[in-house]
Length: 399
Image (tube, rainbow, N blue to C red; front, side, top):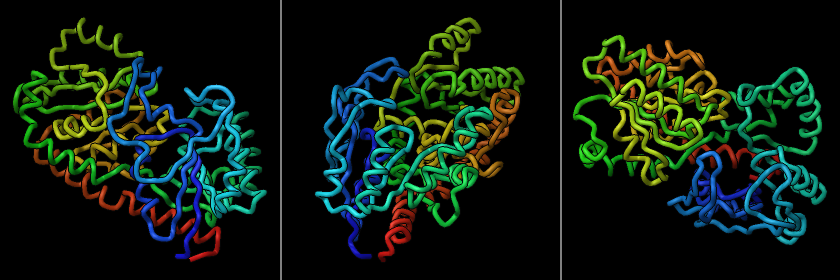
């Protein structure tokens, strides 16, 4: 492949993307420069949905060349209008870039970047998370979206699909298959597999620290504890499951995360005296693999979930997964009855039934976990790089 000068534009450093960008930067034939609108996430920052300050414990700015674009006013958060960046066009010209890859298309600066790139003869690639279930859209919004995409496809040379539902979304809004390339939503599989293996010898120690009795199964929720993630549905399903008495060992239910619904759920747990339900608060990236190793099954009951990368993470630890039918990764990563289950969003009875199926037999549960890890073998950064290069070859004509 002839060397391609590739610019990547993203609002801010993202913990899931940093290792992928490092791999792209090391890939022969690609000369990558990353442009950030803000670097607030690389420092300690206040996450309003977590309700606390966050400082990621993995490097976000290592392994690739980057620049934070200048802006008028503050760069302490990102929204439709902020930061008010400038200067990208000059940098695209000075850097002699051939391709601009943009993460997202719904900010004013994304549109400006596309126009600037096209005016300079660059090819434009877009990668975004949207699906037909990722947000509620009435008829008016869908109609506006049709018009929006009619204009967007004139500015964009290639769309990088993160999965099946994202590809269907582009097709629905008139993007032809010849302009869609598979660049799956992936995490650093090597990191999560390695860290989960390291955690395994300390599993019983972690159990004791959390006050969990040996041998009892563990159900895990890892996400923001907010309405869209539907943690209340999981608690309701847990109540239904434990009332049946079908499981010999009543499972524990661990909530990892923070958010506005934590306190109301804690009040329910206290009122019903649910000694096996625990709220563990926020856990950072390097802490999570130990909890993935500890659990038997992870549940993500969200609605309007574009993907759900926590599912990728726990599958690398070799664990069963249960997701709602409004979680975007479901069609690609969850094989119903093989490595987990997909249930109708909001149906706590169906979720309780799926939990009962997974936890009824430890051997079946372990086999599901092994299947999860096997699925991850073909859903990682190697597939991302292959898809990205295929898109670049197609839009530039260079190989």
